[in-house]
Image 1 (tube, rainbow, N blue to C red):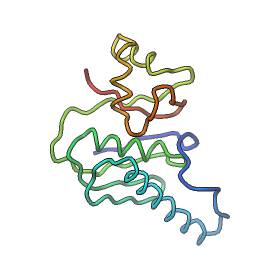
Image 2 (spheres, helix red, strand yellow):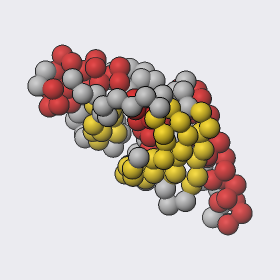
Image 3 (tube, rainbow, N blue to C red):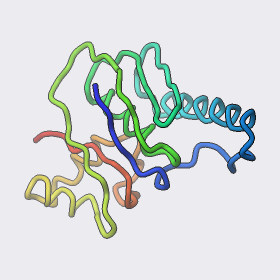
Image 4 (spheres, rainbow, N blue to C red):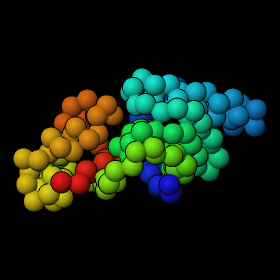
Length: 153
């Protein structure tokens, strides 16, 4: 459990253009964004029971997963959405295993370059790719500001 920071202006767009800045419209937009974020976790097929999201200055997530890998994927799937600056993790893990490191993609990065820096071997890029599925659908589709899981080797 903890607090994770993300770049608000980077990330996947889950809803259309912003609503006018009227208090009621903002609340409605927040509800539809939370529904879209829940749908994103469902679409990605990451198993979680009792998923609950709250939006304030940050996203607060709670629920229960079987593994740290699923917990970390939920944190990254939500944190890598446009407009999310912070994710507070309150997810319970029933079968904890070692946690992965998180890495923020820099301009010019490739999975091979990240793999060389993290593991000393650029050919281990597929470990990073596999650890970030289903959020990544191709090893070449990463962008600056995106946060990735770097599993322990």
